[in-house]
Image (cartoon, rainbow, N blue to C red):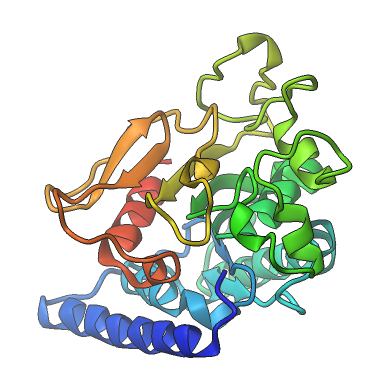
Length: 298
């Protein structure tokens, strides 16, 4: 979410180095993971003030794990501070269609005789959580299989209140109380007086079952969130959590830094080790591992 160019450049350099290292390790370890033409394509959505290159490390880890390059796409939202509804309609909608078409073509060229993929998995960072969740909830829920946010501004953030661009105005204040403060937050999260299911069509259990919009044959989404606390860009840090997330167990290595604090909501808690900052989460090995574990388990 940072707009500081030096921070972004530093993050991108780290991401590239981590990506090269990850691929090198895979090669040194013997046979790389086999390319799997039957995987669900993955769309990655960047945060406020950032771009597709911020997702370079995660892209490299998905490919190293066996995803065909055609099955992974990091979208660019232009401008990167755009309003979330516009971002979903103008950039995420066509990006998902193009990704599914490209994946179907790749499968056909590789000899698959069945129909191509009908859904995508979405990995979103920071404010990208708002636009991508709007896409999943309001625009094309039948096109989304799994949705993961990394330090997501799911209930807004006070840290953007000093900015005046469309995206920041929608994210501020955190936990908006009415549509005058933030229409998109009210659509996605409701309010004390107008409650909604934060994770419609989700596999997890909602705290208030009477509000639950349960999965259907064509609409079934697994929601997961990853967060740090404190988070300099998501204030308060609990904004990242979602009610009704989760729905199935995932397996992590003993050294992974995340622990599940409530169903589907994971907190970086590495026994006293310093947590990465908001943007550096995108280049952290534990983040990549948990994303792959979630996608494999679905």
